[in-house]
Every structure is written in structure tokens, then in C-alpha cells.
Amino acid sequence: MNAYLNLFDFTQKVNYKNEVLAGLTVAMTMMPESLSFAILAGFPPLAGLYAAFIMGLITAIFGGRPGLISGGAGATVVVLIALMKASGIEYVFAAVALAGVIQILVGIFKFGKFIRLVPQPVMYGFVNGLAVIIFTAQLEQFKTVVDGKANWLSGTPLMIIGGLVLLTIAIVLLLPKVTKAVPPSLVAIIVVFLLVMGFNIDTKTVKDIASVSGGFPPFHVPMVPFTLETLQIIFPYALIMAAVGLTEGLLTLNLVDEITRTKGNSNRECVAQGAANIANGFLSGMGGCPMIAQTLVNLSAGARARLSGIIASLTILVIILFGAPIIERVPMAALTGVMIMVAIGTFEWASFRIINKMPKQDIFVGILVAAITIWLHNLALAVLIGVIISALVFAWESAKRIRAKKYTDEQGIRHYEIYGPLFFGSVAAFNEKFDVDGDPEEVIVDFRESRVADMSGIEALSRLTERYANAGKKLHLRHLSQDCRALLKNAESVIEVNIMEDPLYKVAIE
Image (cartoon, rainbow, N blue to C red; front, top):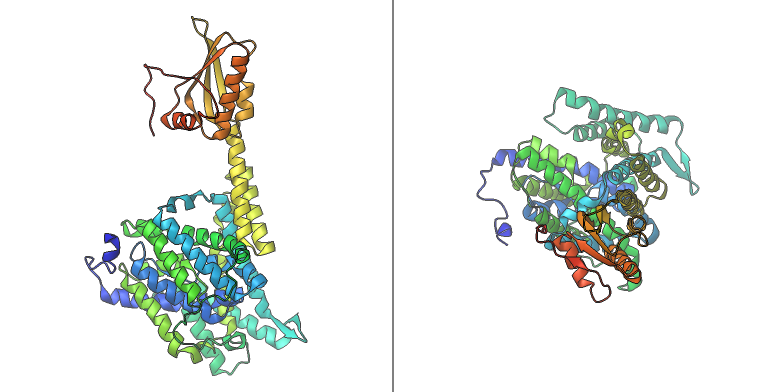
């Protein structure tokens, strides 16, 4: 609770000049992305700007660490594209609010560490698939609708939008080599905007997509049936959105920790993200999560406190309230060029460099997740399948590691020293290690180097004990760790095993 009392970190020395300038810069870099991602997903553009404002303000005040910037991020938005197409914007708002509830529960119960269970190949596949989706979505700007059918542009319109997109990309690529004082994406948008205005170039603008004129985010309860069927529709998307948002958030938080050599609070960040997403669901925002690029912009500008994030979000609100006439005249070609560069920056090019060093099953999982993401535009399904396959591969590999060393001591007692975990995947191999008919009357199974991991392992021990008992022989278990003994104790009403106490061995307690 004390962590929340010091909301603005007054004990920290604040450079107000750096904080204000960093906040303004962050706002200018966040707006194009939020607008572009909203349009990409088929949301109203205002949903993107509202998300940038709401996520930025709430997480800046209540988040897990100063300097971290959140907004309407593509990683979480793309998760909701399939839901938007299938059910509409109201279901999206409901899913965003539910994702917020899940994130708050993760933070309250300190489950943030379990987000790390998403394997790296799944993350590679997810990110690469996301990058391809973002890139291919930009191709829609090179089409026009005639008689209800989408046709590729040709002639002068194609040359105009193509030239403006190439100009945007060139500025984003080349400007950092000249100066890093201003965001290249912002400069590119301004240059293309002035060029189109100055020469009165006829090209598609934001206003042709939708109006961004609006006021303060209105309170709005998602208009969906409050039924079990609705929950079944939105829950998978909410769960994956929550997981993706927290993964992005915790990775970004760790990055800021390394850069600033300070320590953030991951569980507090989970709660702040959740609160922001709940607010998004009821204030017409598309939701979001921490944004790595904007966070790095913030830190490189010298910001180290919470003030910069607050300034950035309030700046976006001011633009929503008073700057709509200008934003609506921004050429779509400029946003398209920015998003193409976002796609290129999002793609994990390092995955190509290490592909020949990765296990074949990891390569398969990464490619499969990327393929499902691209073909079905369903990140929820892609991540879920990737995690399941990774878990099954891990179980299979672990199952092959169980071994048994056998010997008979001077008293004629047969010993089996077990190596590797005993769980559902290794039960069959475990049972094959024993020669019930050929063993002497007393047998000891030593678990010094093993672990009974689940109910399948317990059942295997019960059946093994029963087999030896039916043969008139006695089976003892030795060197079980404390948690294994607890498992067997809890299951003693349904199984019967003999645990041998060994006074010469101290049971390890983890």
C-alpha cells in the first residue's frame, strides 16, 4: 500500500525541463502509431487516441516504475482484429475491460512471473507474424473501392501515394543519421503533410477514413448481452490480450531497470495496466500496454520520473479536444510509411541469424505461430497453440530423461536409483525399468535424483507397489523430497506406498 502513496515519487530529484520536453516528444511519436493501429484494426481512429491518453495517464501515475510509457500498442490491438471482424466494436470494448480485470488479478496475486512461461519461440512467431500483418495491412492503402469492389490503384494516384510513402520511409531512415533531437516519424508526417498542403496534392487523408473530432472520452458501458455466451466469445481474446500486454510490459520494465540501474515493481505494473484497460473498456479506448519504442524515446530524452508520461498523455488529450481539424488532414500515405517502418522494426530479424542454432522443435513452433497469426489474423489461437505444442514437446523431452541404475547390496536387497522426473509423460518408461518377477523379496526405489511431479507419478508408484505386493514382495521408497512426500501424504486415502525413512539422509526442503 505504501508503494501507491508515493505516486509521483516526490523523493526523486526531477529535472522538469527534461520531463516536459520528453513528454511532448513522446506524445508526438505515440499519436501516429495509435492512429495507425486503430485504423489497421478497423476501429474508429478516436479509439486509438483515447487509448493513448488513458493508458498513458493511468500507468504514468500508478505504474510499476517511472519512465515507462504505455499507450495503444499494436501487440495488443492485433489480438482483437478477429473479434472486431466477427462481433464488432462493442465486444472489443468488453474484451478490453475483461483483459484489465485479468491483469489486475495477476498483479494482486503476484502471478506476473508466470507470464514468463510463454516460450521464446512462441514470442518470435508472435512478433514476426504481427510484423507481417502490420505490413500487409498497409497494402490496403494502395487500393480503391469501385462499385463495391476493391481494385489496385494505377496511374497517377498510385504514383502519388507511392512517392509519398517512399518519402516518409526515406525521412524515417535518414533523419537519425543527421540528428536524433526530434522523432523521425513525426518529422516525416509533418513534411509530407506540408508537401500535400502546399502543392494541393489530391490524396487520401485521415478524414477519408473516419473523423477524429471528439471531446473528453465519454463513459460508455459496452453494449453486449451479459450472458455466458458473451463471456465465451470474449474470454479467449481477453486472456491473450492480458498475457501479451503483461509480457510486453514486464519485458519493457526489465529493459528500463537495466538502463536506469533501478528496480521497478512488476506486480504494481500489472495492476496499473489492468486499471487502465478497464478504463479503456468503459471510455471507448482500444486498450494497450507499455510501448518499448516510446519508452526508449522517453529515456533518451532524459526523463526519469513520472511527469513525462503525464505530460505526454495530457498533450494527446489537448490534441483530441482542439487539434482534430489538423489531424484529419494528415495524408494516409504518411501514416502508411510510418507503419511500414514499424513493421520492419517489429520483425525479429535476429531469429534468422540464430535459426540454425535453435532446436528443430523450436523452429517448428515459431514458424507455426507466425503462420497461424498471418493466415487467420488470430493471435489468441496462435499463441495458445504455440504454448500447448511447446509444453508437449517439453513433456516429451523430459519423459525421455528418466533412467534407473540397478544393483543388489550385500543383504540381497535390490536397489533402483531413479534419475529424472516422474510425471505423466515418463510413467511408461518408469514402469519398464522394473523386473518384478526377477527381483528379490525386498526392493528399494531411491528418489535422491528424481522427483514425483504429479498424480500420474503417484498412481504409477501405487500400481508398482501393488505389483510387488501381489508377487509377495516388499517395495520401499527412499529419499523423497519434502514436496514429493506431501503429494503422497495427500493421496494416501486412494493409494498405498511404503516410504522408507533414512536417518543418514536429510530430506531436502525447497
